Image (tube, rainbow, N blue to C red; front, side, top):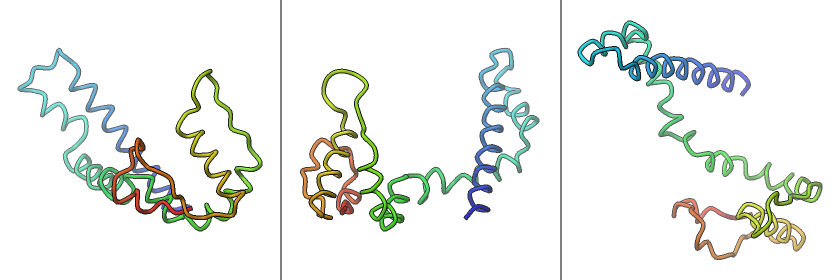
Length: 139
């Protein structure tokens, strides 16, 4: 797992460095449009850019693109340790006014944990959860 995370970090760093280099050239108004492509590939060679694009593909559109799926995959561990974690911490709102959606959700989780309930049966109206994911909420 450490090796995978290290590789992902390295891929992201290389891709961000390429994006930064390309962005500077694209945003430079002194470079004429007809020279732009040549300057871009001079800065980041075509094969390197192609490799970056290939390597970040899954992070942008695949299983790693939405953190929700990572949470679902680790549900057992999260469910096991979250009650103690939530009991140990008090979450408070910085500003005056209505509690944020996140704080309301944490309050609901604390109540469910106190009652020993594991199924979340609340109205999901107003929450921006894609339909396939909304069916997965089981605490």
